[in-house]
Image 1 (cartoon, helix red, strand yellow):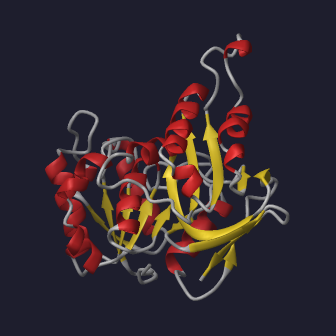
Image 2 (tube, rainbow, N blue to C red; image 1 turned 90 degrees about the vertical axis):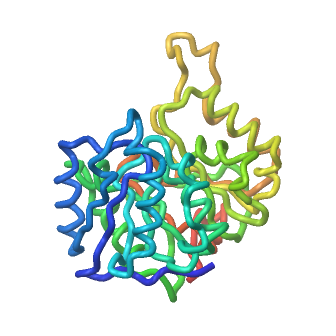
Length: 310
């Protein structure tokens, strides 16, 4: 797995909308936020476009991804936001061109669809990270989140380091044990949506990270069950569970009609026997850590430490 060249101040970042449209009132704020990090910015046409719930038509969004990777003056690519639509453009991507031009590529949520393809087919590390028009411009964007992001995209290789939760946030053990493998995954909905496609996630011998937002508990149950039936949980060397923001019962006044997420994890994940840590500070939440998808990580349930192997 190749590691793209680290970014440095003065480098040029291409901002793209691979999924949903950017709210116009957030665009300049997002540009300013990236420039304040010391980067130059090239704003993709998709950051200005809307095609219903998409940031322009599929052909435009795919062409822009291809062009950003092909352009030698672009040093890194940040997805400006998530939403929906990345899966639609995958068949239109020039994966050979992208593979030949690895660059720092960052985003999360719907961007999970592209992370899987770039890791598995294009063979380079990508970064599950906060995004310019969402987290970067929030008034409560915190030092932990900034530092995790900057440290990952500007110092990409050559050393081992720990992925530590934000202060005051405890990592907990779901299944005891230790595991080592390539880190893969992201948003549960997008990971599940890859099944049965030519771009299906490969979890064999790997560490599977999962998180999600705004899903009823039974939806989380359904998707985890699908992953289990597809063999993806059994194939994994270990599992890391992040934040489950606003994932709860559809009718909180009738708890007897629902199951807690903890119960779902115990009934679906625990029987696999795969070492599993939960409550990782990562996902649709602040603070949030950046994850180097494609790098090898090792974790231990006793020490509750997660180490990235350089």
